[in-house]
Length: 130
Image 1 (cartoon, rainbow, N blue to C red):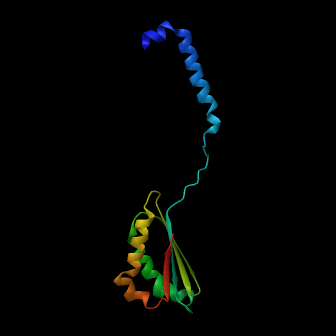
Image 2 (image 1 turned 90 degrees about the vertical axis):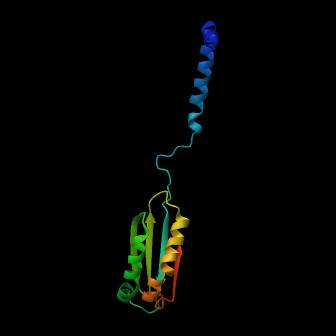
Image 3 (image 1 turned 135 degrees about the horizontal axis):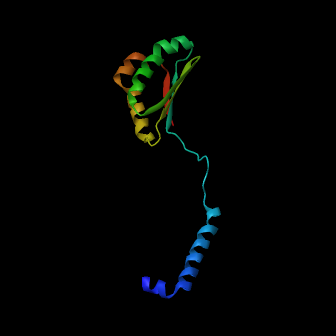
């Protein structure tokens, strides 16, 4: 191969220029984004306690649930909004975490015996969504 390239310099030069031209002409077709959309894995837990004030929900339900969910691991951000009759807990995990596994962990923790004794009898419903 080396002997062929040395013996046919003009042909080798034309081939190199053709490969370079094809490479340069394909650059505009590349799909590159300066700010790519990266979806962070997150879950939202909604707790409902009809007729309860925000303070009552916080004291009777949210503190217990937050303590239990803080032990999940791989949490990037944890945010709670408490409104009249319900609370919304947003959990953002680090990029690359399997959200399906975390969904099962959160559901398991919400169904755990510890939480059932603390607040499940109080709440009319709870839900987890991605």
